[in-house]
Length: 401
Image 1 (cartoon, rainbow, N blue to C red):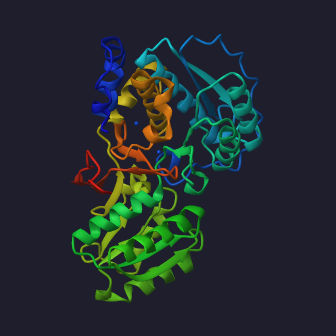
Image 2: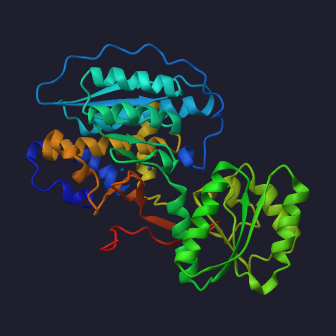
């Protein structure tokens, strides 16, 4: 059900408690985690978690939410962990339900740390776990939580770690690829080539592209893979696509800000004309380093609805004195969703049937829902690089989908 519909039957007290936060959530709850397909610095995962604070006494009839994040991890992973913890606490403060307690645990960015954090949280009586961020940590927490029969709402972009009871509230590349292929097909693009980086992200989007194209009757004209720092091979890949001429009417280029300059330079040098061959991308393009590149401008890409994120970021800056990382809104939405379900139905509201309601909810990043297999589906918008919205994000899922 849309989030607005979730308030039906609430008490006046619960409705008042949610009003401020809901305004931000609905106006505005799974890069990659930081706005692109991945987070730089994932190799810096050796930090040990900080000692965990002692849990406060439980509130009778209340809800205990374990929040497990890599707060003390090195590099960008730790920065994401801190921002997501802040956002989770901001959601709890805005909802302002005294019966809900957040028990924040630091996993240090390691599976062992995540497992220990989950065991401690469950020993302290949590009803649901929000987090962690990194795929191996999600696996570790999922194993512990399943044994205790407690749901997990995590933030990895690796859909292989999802499963019954372990739900991913993240920006999944597969959803973005399907949205841009669907839109391109609707605009008459029937023969699409792909120029895809040789990365873990590239492997995921290449498979998703081929599956989506087959489902929609779109011809995959070519699938070229490249390594960004091998400029000669990248140039050769671009030239092979350019040599196909009119056999290609669009080019899928799922590159991010770190590699787009090289990729865009290669396709420009090969003579691929954006006026004849439509460039297509994912939310990895939602970055000024990408959209400011002349070759990319005019390209189409799928990304979460931006309408609600601005309000969230503004409130975050006012509270914490700095900008949130892009993934922070996910932690906000996870906590707000849990609080909203609890306010309406108590702990029973966190059942699989409720969490996987096919109508979904509208959060900070637009419409989403969890499937029974733990993977999420999002209603995404299509944007034009250097321009505006080409196709707005849907406000409801189509019946029967």
